[in-house]
Picture 1: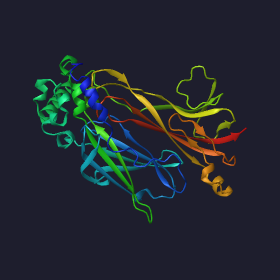
Picture 2: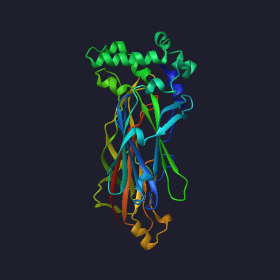
Picture 3: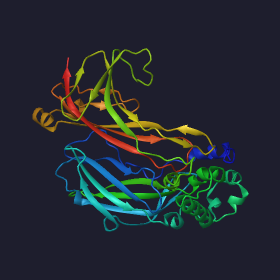
Picture 4: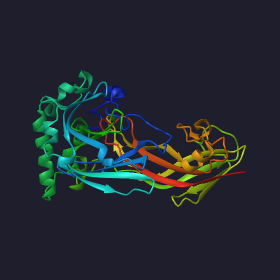
Length: 382
């Protein structure tokens, strides 16, 4: 079965990009006067039909903003265009009546809201993203490579087969992996998107709308039932947040071989110290664990990658007291996390947030995992 979905699918997969953006607008600098999203965290990352998903939205910035001014919507019926990666919401509903909301605490510098959302058992059957004749959504070159006996099955027949496998496996009579060789590949075509929308209403302003897309598939239930060979994606684990202080002026730190550097571990006590010296390069990074393996469209088992998104907030009292212009603030190079420190040394206090997301090439509709960490401290200029 490894060669059933061949390089023709891999070529088509160039166009298979994510639809709804995780952030409708991204902000590297979090001002105390604005209310900004840090991350939408889905737990578990790999959710199956009928299971309960916990969505935690973490915000920072304006601490006086009333989170009740956020209007939440959800759509379980979203059309994903396989060729162009676009997504269209077919219908949506207010989230609050169908989910249990909990106001949670992520850190003193953030606001967090969680929702426990029951995924409909029949979400795959009802999703307009998969047509009744499911091979119609595939490019001809891809459809030609699907096994004939499987290609002749309708959408509901495929789902019936998967759920039948689940029932027998959960009863202890599950089929062997030899009989399921095609399932990990076909599951990619039977993954369906959902979309959560947060409309942030601020006085005298139009709503700031954030859309977050996630994926629902059978993988986690099949794996939990003991069926081997089914890839499951878990959220990354941030082991520690560090600043690499490199003893020379460089633009990136992708390859540390031959470099002399110091590793400064940051925490959220407010006591972390970054000594800023001229002639050195500094890079903010998150060291992670829990890298998962998956199966690509062409049958290869590969390991996912993790990438880091960085945000910061400076101390508003320092800035306001000394009337420091924003042009003197700090910034990150998003390519490798290189830090450009404040040009005004009266800026001494910082809060950093790092969001780690996972990614893999050539797997269709993979749910994205993420993790968020906050650290804080002060700059000491040498």
